[in-house]
Length: 246
Length: 289
Image (cartoon, rainbow over all chains, first blue to last red; front, side, top):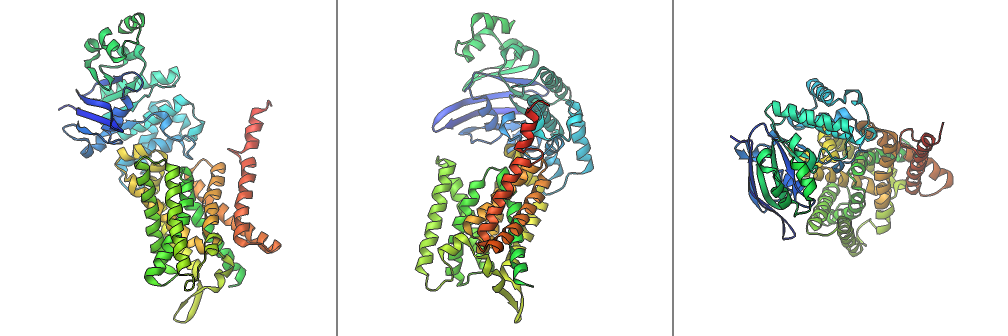
């Protein structure tokens, strides 16, 4: 059974279609890049799959059941700038939030949850910053805290919205390492991504999106010059596209 | 107990209640909703009077709670229909407040409530308005009411601490974790309504906004921990009450006005000297050593 099946998802803002009839199905243990130009609806797709914004129609199935019934299996890493980093809390506390689903409503975190959160911070190389106030972390460190939080959540399917934006080289490496580790453990990860240069290195599958699905499949066969041109409306020059496709 | 102690006790309870609830308003960037609810609860009080012919106690709390939640709901509704959120707040609370004002003037000859009292409060009368049980006075009504609301506020914050925290920090993440974010929003607005109406009689609709927002904004400058911010905010509320009361008796001015001025003074002092976010520290950091 595929971990994620998306069927004919359509989203409209003010009667204007921003996503049309998006369907795809992801096998287990794959890293999937969602690629497309600005305004192609990449983040919108993620938000529609997670029910943050209403879908006009369409269904999202996680391991065979509607997403609404499988929330606990899905982890979400929002864009870094979607939260207020001046919030009075530290890195460990933010990672601990990933455990809230396991702890249950109205209950307190147990010692074992704190231990797991510490391990997750360690995995992204942020253990020394556990007690650091989150506004005093660099952009890359903040992104790593978000990833540690997703790890602590221990989901089966992950949605990550632009995790590579504005991070330093060390963080980029840490994220790639983490994605591969998740894959080894049989997790399925969808990543909104904008850097065409790295697509081939990072992702097993790509979803080329521009309001509708231009192409979906294994990176090897789908990430082609023609598909990229079609996705970006011919705005990628021949040379750079040739370079990207390799 | 003496007159002074009852007033200080009342003001301190207002400070603690407002400090606790205000912390979440400041962190959720909803300061203006406190302005809205502090005004629209007037309609709830008048409405409660029309139904129960009483101007106190449980009926008043229920009236304020209903109108407070109605305000929140209408603001949300207008916003969803495409009205900008600040405009939605402005439209809803002025309308509800105005209806309250009209109703008060309609019943003016029968109700001991006037618009000036509603806006400014009169904490100086608090000690004489006592609660009697079996013919015996057991202390100021305002203190009992504020104490009751404080118990509710503390209970909710302790019980739902982690839910309040995550829905304030990252509401989208909270939704994916199955946390009832909308329910928590309404619970918080309910706490705000109760806090406002309990503080209303003492400090009035406008100054209750000062008590909700300023101590919390001050506490925000002093700490990096939510739990510490809650305690700090409550303590700053109490401190403002004491300083304000002393100032008011020294210069023979409005007590509630002096308390609100004290919150402002503490804020500006903190803005300069707070160890982590104060301006002095920032400048010292910048200048070469």
